[in-house]
Image (cartoon, rainbow, N blue to C red; front, top):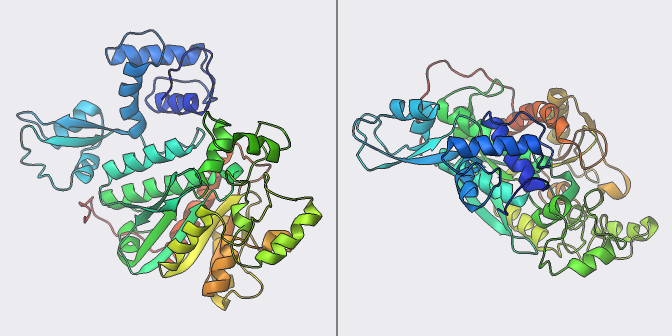
Length: 439
């Protein structure tokens, strides 16, 4: 984290404001501008934790702040400690501590043992810019809180960023959801990450989520999330050109001479539109470029020099081929619409399931036409596997969608995410208190 002080601005300021707000220290807007109200919140944070209250987020303040960005602390057990007592000290839930430490006996804590203590607020921020760095911190925080979460790499981006997959569940029915093929559509990444956090918490504490029993889904399905397919592009949109970017001069040229990518850039860092790079009517996508005035790499619609030319699409193809996915959903924005077919290759059940998804969300069920129907991930999956695949376009307006839409977007999509995991109607969760998760 860079040193932050009055007058600074950026996605890192937004992240800091967001966590200070969740801690109850900041009441202003999460706008990414380090103003006087933000400075006062930083000073209060510093006083609370015995730091020099200068209102500057330097290295010492940043180290303390980092544990709150991660969402947990590590506590060393003393004589007489219990999970309940530790929870009281931190103002958190003893059941959350138990879930984070499944190998410990809560009635017989060993002096000197190190206990992971989740804070009372959530890990995934839904009111701040969602960069790749935020994603990595969120994954680390969720893994610490819920050690039964499985995290793996499916490949890397052009610039070497790990493409992560999160697995929820251990059941035989595999489904997969992905987000942020398009850089401007980064709001879809926190949709999947918020879903992961809410589902993990419900599973760990034995509580229903959206009318479903999470343990029943966990045992019957494996839900694989790829929350950020295009991390290089997302960071370009949110943070602009950073020092050392090897594509700097080319990106400015591909962007019509402008260094502002915040409202136009959908592609990866090589100017390839990843959702037009799959081998499904790729030639038609390529032929359509001329009519759109596209002659090479740029912000959008350039299909690449050949199908699956990009490391991100290769990673998604390899990941998909290595799992027996019964259904996939690719998250995009915007339009509040669900696209379900590709060249009439979708199986009959795809429309039936799609209509259920539409009924749950209030989104329209449609078939894509024209250039939008070529060379996308859903298109390739439908073509090669002849199984249900969906492109979900969340929200309304112009990309990038404002975070003010997030609560509505998440509310509309939670039911779909749960339904698709089980491909069936919600069943009431059983009663009873929380139980410890299986590891």
